[in-house]
Amino acid sequence: MAIDAIVLGYLKALRLGGLARSYKEILRDADEHNLSHLEFLKACLEHEILFKKDARLKRLVAKARFPTLKTIDTFDFSVQPDLPKHNMELMDAGFVRKRESVIFVGKPGTGKTHLAISLGIAACQAGFNTRFYTAANLANQLVEARANHSLSRFEKNFKKLDLVILDELGYVPFSRDAGQLLFSMVSARYELGSFIVTSNLDFSRWTEIFGDEGMTAALIDRLVHRGYVFRTSGDSYRFKESLRMAREA
Ligand code: ADP
Ligand code: MG
Image 1: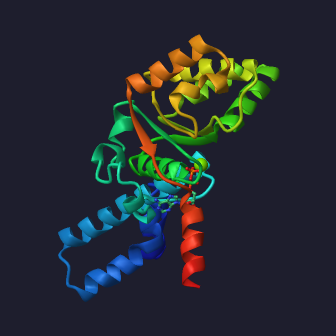
Image 2: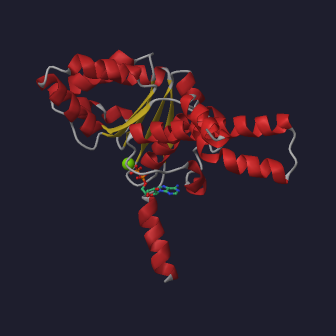
């Protein structure tokens, strides 16, 4: 068998998919730059590490089911002077490592979902299992899971996640039943993993979401006890942007 085919066979057997795809290019490059054997080996290994890292990131981002992809570098911090731009703890997903939570409270359109997704993607980059839900969507899934007798399976998977994003808590009030299910799911993961919660309602109004004062207080306590709370200020960014564009037109 030609040596090429043998090498390719070995790379596939070892699941070195990045090298299987690119080893010829790396070889050519090594010839061009007169790389030593050791330098060539290093280039091969580096290539495979980057390839695997990228594949893992793509897998984690797909599994997270973000509604759109947003990153922190497109976030305009000048309109949010109270937000810490350089909080590396957050950006490097240190809060997930420490099983802490992040809560964004602010009016609609002030960038809460953008920030939640950005932190979620940073968590995926750090290798964490992440899942994005709107609060209403999660509540529906829980009610459905209970009807199908699959709640314990749901809980098992839910507990395996490193980071759960609960977006738009407070937009739709829950039935007492759904509120209780959501509360028990959050409690089950408490201290096992991180949450990012976004809400248009200040904590003082969360009872309106869950209906039950004691349960709401316990939930806030759990999230805030191990968490960071950020308030986004001002008016809708999109609205401001469209005004600016209209003025410039
Ligand atoms: P919220 O979740 O608070 O309602 P979003 O995060 O959905 O707000 O923001 C609405 C839109 O405006 C999104 O497209 C988002 O990317 C954009 N946006 C909001 N705030 C900013 C900001 N400070 N910099 C850049 N884009 C922003
Ligand atoms: Mg939002």
